[in-house]
Length: 557
Image (cartoon, rainbow, N blue to C red; front, side, top):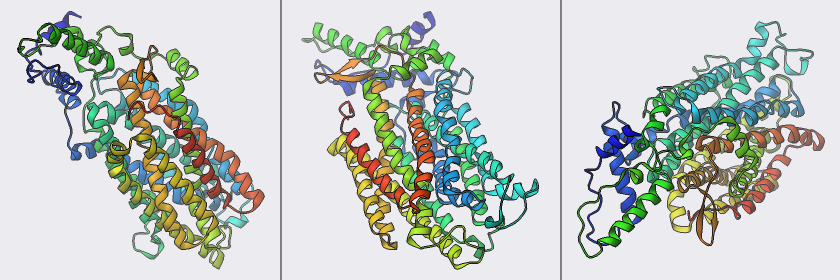
């Protein structure tokens, strides 16, 4: 504590206010605290001043580059995993059950990985080591996935058409391993990456980095879908033997580059140093309110005197140095927080859960829907048959529709921050979900090519909404240290909650939704003998999500 007090004394020469004897505004108080921490961070053995300064748009793009690779991977998964699984001889029922493996693992292990990222004590930081490990596992999986059938033949599978496949085949477990590695690690990385982005940004930049990540992610997704829409067998670049393998090769390269750029963007403060030095911690509500109260007391005493620049004292500058909230979250605390979840978080997670149910119903089976229902093709058709050719043409056409969705997602993410400021978060959140619900309803009723390009933009609006506003709300809850509002005032939280763990629970909503979709939709498709049911279910789930979004605690956002 003596070291902390000495560090604080070294920063007390910072000028805070210049507005005479009037009481400083909240913004002036926050700016002064950020400036004091910025000067202190510059004096460390390693410069951590990036944590407390405003970042340019280019710096935010550099910070969030890994999202380009993740969205690129999502595009390839959405377009090709269902055809890959059906192409190794699985029925719709078993194919959708295969999708359940990664969400089962994710539901139990993703929060534990995120909780670990809150407590890891290595010199390189907390989020980046975990993000690196997940990224390498993801890249391994995306190399295996499109080559599952080839690897199976190497181990002894007969190289025969899908309608002649029978008995045990190595290609099935190999492909499942590749799918689990890519799917589980991609979504877990998504949550860890967003926690890292917000850790590296001052409060005013947190919404900017989320919308920036959505924008460049949308561009990455667009490129991924466009690559999937190209018939690589007709080009000289079909060097790996199939459309799927060629596209996943590009994904592998983009993922590696994006991961490298993000991991080398900004250094994290090691947890041991963070525990020793409160001036390197983010400004929480306790620190802000302590400084605000002190300023009120000082100005009340000297209200008739023009004061000299005020020097923040040790307790207000550092926050509450021994506050339990700053200590690492232990595993038992994490488990307890899941069981005793605040109502506001439960509603937010429920909204995300229903949103993911709707989105997954669409994205996991969309290209299959276009190939079979819109184009009238058959994935089980004999090689060279008109039915299989129509199906493959439909899959590529569906990729163009999803490219439109990704473009709209990127475009909408560029304006969503301004929409929230103008209309507030509640109507923006609900409108994004309702538009998607309407778009899916129309596409299910009118199974024509043109309707794909009318409905897909609504998917982009909904996707940008559910991958920005929920994370921003969690940031609001933690920055205000409150999950409840009474009589228009925030009620202070008394329970320790890890920011990374709470962000990762969003990933759990995806895993839980994917598990339900995987176990249920395939059987329904086989029973009714049409996969148009997935489009109608997407519409219904999104409508329910919009209703739950109306009950979210928005904390004035």
